[in-house]
Image 1 (cartoon, helix red, strand yellow):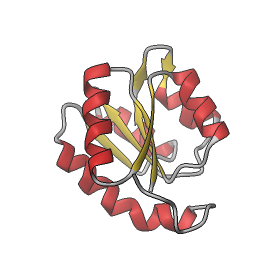
Image 2: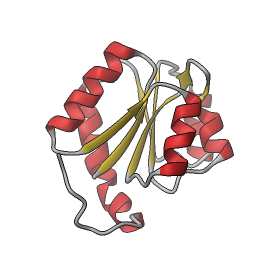
Image 3: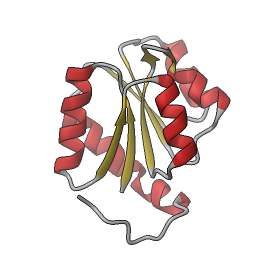
Image 4: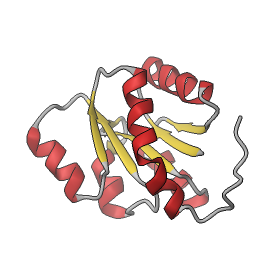
Length: 129
């Protein structure tokens, strides 16, 4: 399972990245809007974990500009219903409000794994680290 993590908070991103890797998933971590766009363009991912507010851009603009070919979980400190609804309208499959527990993120990813696997363009035998 290949996950793209777009998170600009170094402490939080490091914790998420370590946790996801401890499950055996491959994680590519980028800290900005432009880097996330480039990673989506250059690589294939099964899931995108996307911060709502990146230092150099709005995470929602990634959904608006380039609907990722993979299911997207938006992670945000914004707890407004309008943000949740906008995320869903733009194609996100889930929306987590920060702070959240790492087990909650793992649970949400596991819930969308069947959808991610069904949409995967790569071989089903993706290596795990």
